[in-house]
Image (cartoon, rainbow, N blue to C red; front, side, top):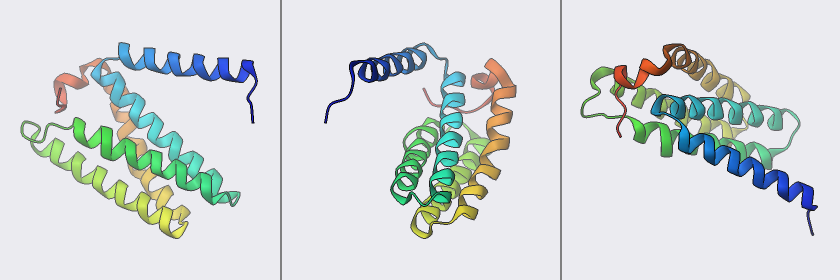
Length: 140
């Protein structure tokens, strides 16, 4: 079917707004946006699971796994990052595994577990402010 012009315009505006925010963001802000997006996708997956919308749950979990596997993990500089980078890499691997289990088993407890792990990291990252790129091992 067709979507209304206003719906298409709103979607285009949102895409441009997101692209602009990403292109103008510092490395710290990008990681912050990724962590926020990760938590938002997991929250959406939990809501979909609760209402029995398994398809949407799967889509949201897939987005969350992609954020981890295609953005957060590759941003780590494992060669220079020492224990911090290695620990974050392990944490991200654990979260990706739990998200996969949640998707396969429709397991809300696994989704809650990932939120429990990521929220303190996201909060700490946000509190570090712009000094984070100088402190944490991010590849460029």
